[in-house]
Length: 606
Image (cartoon, rainbow, N blue to C red; front, side, top):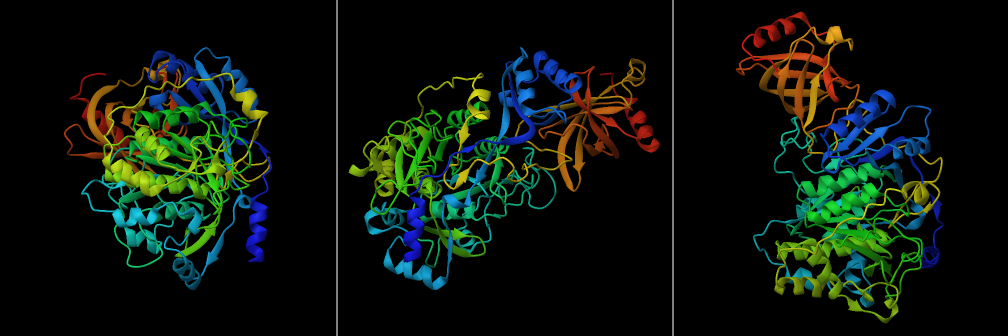
């Protein structure tokens, strides 16, 4: 008991605000012109040839690009230089977010201790005075035959082998991906993404080396059923784990953006975001606006600094996108927790967030505190509403949740609704509501001049149990050095590039039209695409995956009639002549070149 009181007293102290950091040598650039336009190719040519920048990933729909800058050039200098480019709408550093261990508490509990808590309260994790009504949701749950609502947990990963995850069948499965075959079956740019994606390691392995994401996921499931007793039953929701925070709790804006696009493009209707910082990112704002156009709900932690978000912004909670729900944390007494941010204008509602019991890796249970823990109660409630009424869009989910709060005098002037989450009435109200098939119009007002002023010299601190990284803490979370497979439905045109850039050498090979399949091997992974032109010096390959400049790959090219396959190594390079990235055949064997020569005899020139 003494320890518990000591911890609560520490949690009541506002956390220090820290200077925001970013990944060294990386920037995010948004162009004014559409991807694929002459202007975009002109910029990419200048970036590569004149500025020695290297493309790491692209979000083609947004005309947004993630670059590394030359060694020795500061991010500040690169931002200033690119900002002056007439083709650039905005440019910003690739900001880091950092999970902090002192913004929350975790204690692993034995099975007997979990049972004691279960016996003390039906909900097992909430004091009587803060009961949000999940028991009514449990008892009212019925099988509707509707698709399970998918909740993307953008966090530190998930222990998919936890008995609760297995017993409830809650882990999302990609229906269009064949497990373990090393092939990008659904052509979304991610190989074997059967249960989500790890953007830190650029892999489908969703391990949670921090515990945070598993804890958050358990809270979401606890709105579906009592996860502390058996037998468990098949959940009405599915958890899509998207890891962008590494084992040290560090995550980049570029990875967060990729996770957000992946979530909505692969069917998530609710996104749980127990992370953030005080630095404004226009690129992140655009990604969230995209979720609104897709009808999703974006639930975000208000932050753990004990500050007023109305005057000291916290992002993503403070973005004004209509589908964003910002969540504060309360004590058992319904008072705002001392560590929790608040804001009568910018924080939507409150939810319990102190000593919350939930799942942790290795089949365990433990308690944590933070707005990180308050946020998934809202996400879980919205998921139950979405399952009950599949046609309901994110904006209406938010409206109902905010309208159905339990009004609490202690929360007046602290949150917009002056209330705490009421899961029972929210789900009940959704069941009888008239479904709104449209949402209010929303246009994001871009603020291209605020990046350096507000972020590089500003302050930041994390949301939930997450905050920004101090100078010198950790290494940037980089993916594979050989290839970055970005979340883009980008038809990357890999065009002809000769072995030498000299004009006379480029004229040495004729290109021929070819319509056939190609498999692209990068290490032990395999992407799929198509070939649209071929020469003895290279090939034009179309694939939704993004290949890193300079990366070595292997192509397995099908013949025009599909009866033959030829393997050849290639190198991703920039073609100044074609204003595009391309693949050059490096030291192709004579046998391959001979077969290509035979194929092209029946093909027309490109």
